[in-house]
Image 1 (cartoon, helix red, strand yellow):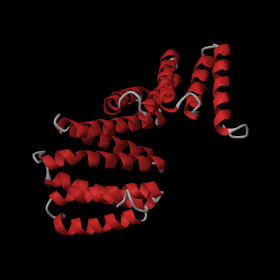
Image 2 (cartoon, one colour):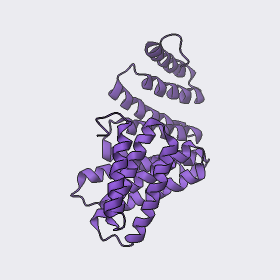
Image 3 (cartoon, one colour):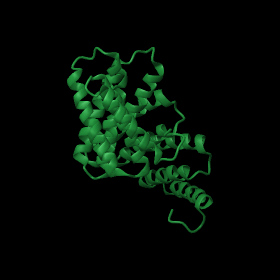
Image 4 (tube, one colour):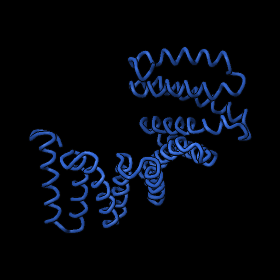
Length: 266
């Protein structure tokens, strides 16, 4: 009902589901997984609606259930827990995103690392026969790696930025294919990191990869193409190739005029 009804109806339905799950299985161990899924889905709706206080309450409750699950399943014998582990990885990743948004960088990093630990374990336990689940896992873990690289950049941990981003790129390519917006985003982020590291040629290659993807996906006159051209122009300018930089900036300006008109902050 969440996907087909108004956003306000979703939390109500999931709240009722949560009451049923609490009644039927909360004390058994098996029920915890279903409860976390219900709470997590409720949290996603709160995130979509911008209700971040309610979101934090949902994630706190889900985290408590996760702690109880780990108490009940010290060994990974039950396949039910193996295949639901990605839910918990996604949950800790979103907790980290919420904390990052609120400026709590240290706790955000801790939760991203927790998400990565759970996600990697889930991938190891997922059989090749469950290919769809495996691809979902690659995408989830790729996103977590990307968030870790981003937060390391925010913290100035320059030696700990590239590897997570490269891991993210590899996993996203496997899960989503080469021509996907998330793959382009990782290429772009790698380019920014390389600029800050002074590796101009490698940065240029990363931006060119991203440019090629956004042109393929959105066409030549999309504002995202202009953004990539702007960064390419920056690299050319830094390298002293001013004429080439000017040509690229002019093309970016043409696209932005086409997209936004003459009077616009961009």
